[in-house]
Image (spheres, rainbow, N blue to C red):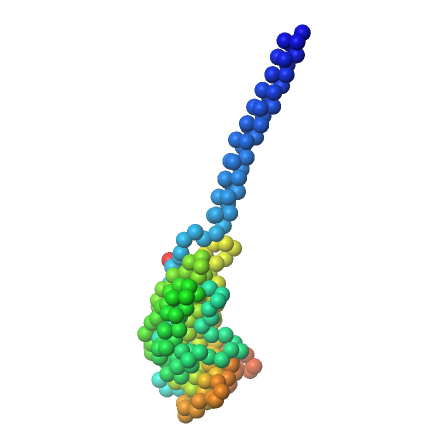
Length: 237
């Protein structure tokens, strides 16, 4: 009688242990799948993008005082995180942005970017030569990573007192993965370092420097609408 009772208890315990063991085997499998799904949703490694800037600044699109010899200076930009910004509306230009917008020079803006790279706020810098034939495009590459998913770039509008075009803080991370491409229309900006209001205005430094703003003169606005001066396409390689 006692032996039968213990046999029944042993069977019950064996069934319970077997069921527990099966559950334990299934749990890691489900957990592993969940972790894999989370990892798949986040870019693991860096990505490289081809950067192409094409001018749309022409006598037809921007007829008011369209200048002879119109062109863009070389591009300069960087991949970075939210703690760095190449330019921002409402903020006074850095010395580097001011010189770029007035003279088309990359120095000392390149030094400012390199300092951000050394501090971990930027990932890499990229540059091109000037775009003087608008039948061509400015082409370069930029590398982004999880720590530096944003891209900013600028180029001077030449001639001008301190006007430039570009983009700030373009996020190439999309739904936890790298975007295949981004296409943007670029407008003209007034850096805020010069008081000139025409393409060939004499050099007249603003003292103090004004905050960077959208260029709202007749050169870039038609019937109250800002007319873009270029298009930018970033395509993952």
